[in-house]
Length: 320
Image 1 (tube, helix red, strand yellow):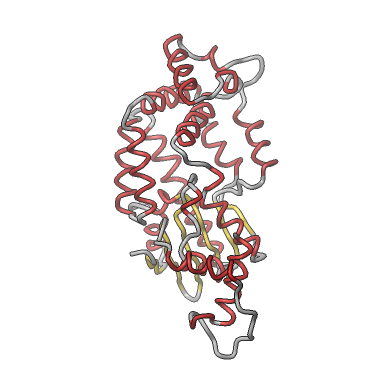
Image 2: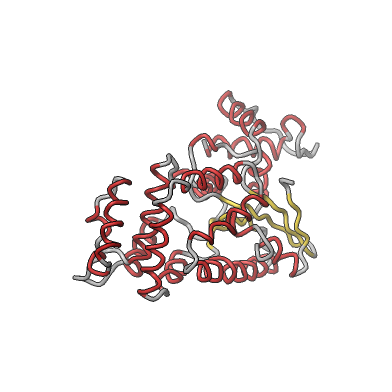
C-alpha cells in the first residue's frame, strides 16, 4: 500500500489532482490507476486518528504526530492530511527506528539480559514467582522464554503479551506505517532517541525498583478493568482526543503508586524536555521534520506542543 500512497501523493501534490494543493504551472503526471484511486478514496474518507500539530517560528516549520505503538490493520490508511504532512516534510523523525532489527536485538543483548547463570525466577519471592507464571500461562507465553530477562524487560514482555491477546500488534504501529511512506518517497528516517537511550532508562533502575515495577504491573494485568482501560486509551487515540489521552495517563499512575514518580519523571517529563530541545535544534538547522512519537508525549503541560510554545513556536492543532 505504501508505494500506492507514494504515487498518489506525487500525483496529488505535483499535478493538483482533484484541485487540491495545486499550482497551475506544475508538470502533468499520469492519472492514478484503480488501486491508487481507491487508496485516495480511503484516505479522504478516513477520520483523523492520533494527534497532529504544525509548528513554526521565523520561517522554520515542521510537524508533530502522536503515534500509537500498537494497532490493527483497519486503522489504516490514515487520513490525507497526515499523509500530505509527511510528504511535505524533509524527513521522518521517530523516537527510535524499530525497523532496524539488528540494532534492536543488539540493544536487548546489551541491556535487557541477566548475567548468566542468573535467572529471573531466582530473583523473585515464591509468591511473586507464582503470580508471574500464572500470568504468563494466561497470556500463552512460555515461562522459560523470560528466564534470561531482567525484571524490567520481563515486565515489558507481559505488557506486549497482554496487548497481543487483545488483538493489537506492534507490526501495525503508526511508526511502521509512516516508515513505509517515507521509504517509498525516498525520505530519510532519523531518530530522536534510539534503542540504547530508551533501554538505558529502564536499565538505570535498581533491582529493587525493577521488582516493584514488575509486581505493580502484574497487579494491574490481573485486574479485570485492564482490558477496558486499553480500549479507552486506543479509543481516545482513534478519536484524536488529546484531553482524554491526558486524563487516562493521569489515572494510570494510580495503578503503580510506587513506580509512578519514576514513570512521570524519567519516561515523560525528562524525555519530553530532551525531545523538545532536539526538535528545536533540527528546526534551527533549517530541517523540516515530521516528528512522530508516542501520543502521550504530546499531551499536558509538559507535552511537546506546550514545551515548544514556551520556546516561542507557534503550535497549531490540525485535529481540533
